[in-house]
Length: 186
Length: 186
Image (cartoon, rainbow over all chains, first blue to last red; front, side):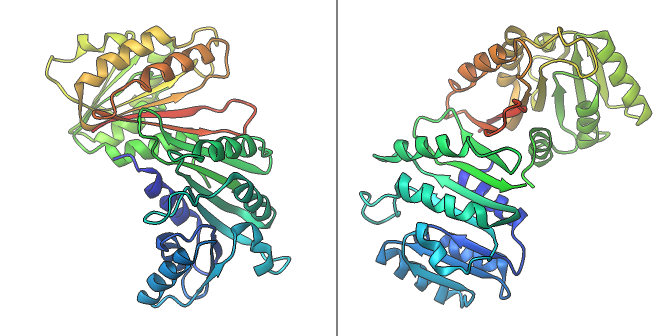
C-alpha cells in the first residue's frame, strides 16, 4: 500500500541517515521518533531531542530508558534554540519535526510558525551534503493551517541550486491527514 | 537522495506489481516504461501498451524486440479505448501514464485532458484491490497546465473510502519538473 505520512517520513530518514550521524528530533513528543533516530545512528551516533513541554521530556526519557538508549540528549528547550547545544562548525545529517500538538496532551499547546521557521533557518546552514530535514505536518487543528501556509511560503522559496523541497500528500481525504515536507541539501 | 518523479513512479510500481499481473502502459512513448512493466510481471504476466503515434509504437516494438519481450501487446490506439482490448471482468493490477509529449518527437502532439480523464475513468472500475494507477505529469509545455488542473480537479474528488490519492511533487523548482499522482484502490 502507499505509505502514509508517518511511514514515508521514516522511509526517507532510513534511506538517508547512517550509523554515526548527528541528527535532531525537533519535536520529541512521546519519544517515538527519538527512539527511531537513536537506533538509526547507533552507538557511535548522536541524537538531540527538543521539546518545550515537561510531559514530552518525561515521556521521551522513559521510552529511551526502557530501550537502554545512551546516545541521546533530551533537551527541555524550544527547537529554535538548538544552536546553544551545538558547536559552531558541527554539521547535522538529519532532522525531523512533527508539527501540531502532543498526542494525549493539551491540544491548545501547538507548535507555531515562528519557532518552526526559526528552527529550520537555524538547521539549514548546518546541514551536511545530502542532509535531510523532514517535517510531518498535522494541520487539522485550530492554528494548523496558519502554520502550514507559512511553512509552504517559506520552503518554496528555498533556492533549487542548494535544496530540493518535496511535498508528499494525500489529496482526496476530507479529514486533513498529515502531509510530509522534506528538504534535502544538494 | 530524494527520488525524482520518474524514479519514484517506478518504486511505487515495484512495490505493488507482482509476477503474473496484468498491467497497462497507457502512454507507451519510447517504450521504457513498457519494458520496465514487462520485466516486473514476468513471463506469466501481461502488459498492454497504448499509444496514438506510429513513431511511439515503432520505438516501443523495437525496444521490446531487443529485450526478447514476449508478454506485451503494443496497441496503436488511444488509451481511452482500452476496454476494446479487455474482456468485461478482467481486473488490472497497475497502470502508468506519462502525460505530456513524446520525447524526441513533435512537441505539439500532447496528451490531453479529455482522453486522459476518459482512460482513468475506464481503468478505475477494473482495478484489483490495492491496484495502482501512477501518473507522471509533465506540465511545463503549452497545454500542460490545463491537463494538470483538470486531472487534479478530478482525482481530488475520488471517494476516500475506495481510493487513496497521493501527490508527490518538488515545490521549489522554477522549471516545472514532472510530478507524480498515484491512485490506489483500497
